[in-house]
Amino acid sequence: MDGTINENDLSRIIAADKAHVWHHLTQHKPFETSDPRIWVEGRGMRLWDQDGKEYLDAVSGAVWTVNVGYGRERIADAIRDQLVRLNYFAGAAGSVPGARFAERIIEKMPGLARLYYCNSGSEANEKAFKIVRQIAHKRHGGRKHKILYRDRDYHGTTITALSAGGQDERNAQYGPFTPGFLRVPHCLQYRAHEQEGAPQENYGEWAADQIEAVILREGPDTVGALCLEPVTAGGGVIPPPSGYWERVQDICRRHDILLIIDEVVCGVGRTGTWFGYQQYGVQPDMVTMAKGVASGYAAIACLATTEAVFDQFKDDASDPLNYFRDVSTFGGCTAGPVAALENLAIIEDEGLLANTTAMGARLMDNLRDLMERHAVIGDVRGAGLFCGAELVTDRESRAPVQEARVAAVVSDCAKQGVLIGMTNRSIPGYNNTLCFSPALIATESDIDAITDAVDQALARVFG
Ligand code: PMP
Image 1: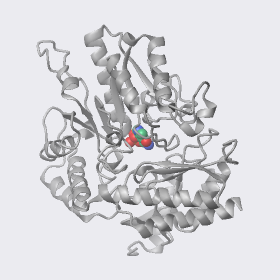
Image 2: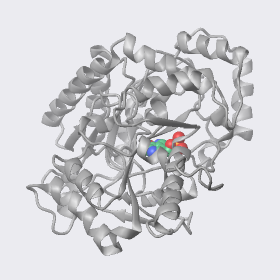
Image 3: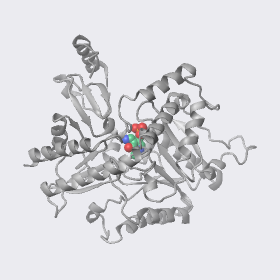
Image 4: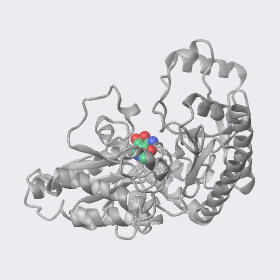
């Protein structure tokens, strides 16, 4: 850390934060007697807090975002150059970096053709839902408007995104929700024993068939779309079981249901391919992306669609209502696409997809080695540099350990200078998975340092 903030400034900053900032996902009472952590600087995979303490960040900025690591001058320089040339113009016109990034990212997504700019993952998902609803009105008299989402998946924080939210703890106290969203069961094979009628063999096909059961119950002519995460993130780090995606794709095609894949976490490299769905050979109709698009250097999210979806909004130009009547004020800020262009170039120039696959395999191997020493680890799963280790009281019953003990492992690692995460709080069975999502630049020694810290933390917390 370069120590540019002196102690006097720092105490004023902390006082200002305590007096005026409302932190995300935070109960503030403890700050009456202690200070919040304030991040001061980041380089590569390392962060420094207000005390100058160094941390190895194994969660890419808490929520799986900073894919290319901190302190990238190349991105900062490109943003600066663009902003002094033209920072912003919204609405119907395009921009130079907007056109360039759309071409570059669509190249990575065979079968998709159009890119729509906005600012957050929630917003991108809401755009996708609006497209489904508009197509339902245009082609099906409003009838084919229902949108299916999955237990444990998360699609954002706004009321309608929460209406498609499969994590009850996040939804509690925010209803009533937007009508027309229906839940389908999760596909976490490790917890199949909690799902009535779930077989151990061909579990993936069975889990997909549960989606079709909901479609048939509701009537396929009422269901417009299915929205899924390729690998469920905060709901437990859940890669799909084998056979799942093939069956899901087939179900959507048979019932003329649009498949929306929420790549807000997995998009742009996290799993070792450009998009998570590309691991599973599935072909979506719409893809939303946000966090890794510009690695947090600018607020940008995008919705990609097929030409077939797009065409429905331009085929009848004589109808004054036949265009996508949607806007995003800051979708017109050029910092986003220019940062995204550099972010993409860094991933290519530094071979970060291959690194993600190699380092992801090492992380999984290390975590599996830990299973031999720590009976509390019931399951290790993941895709690329996105892994989870589920903690259970015993491997036979698979009963989840208490949240407080999972949190104790996370905070023990932080004391050792390694930031790891855990899945969402408050719901037993959902809150017992340690999460790892280091930047795609991670080296072997970074990966080993992460799992060494977990090894020590587990030994201390579980003995
Ligand atoms: N989808 C998924 C899968 C996410 O994990 C998140 C954020 N955690 C979102 C959507 C919402 O993104 P944002 O916070 O940018 O609105």
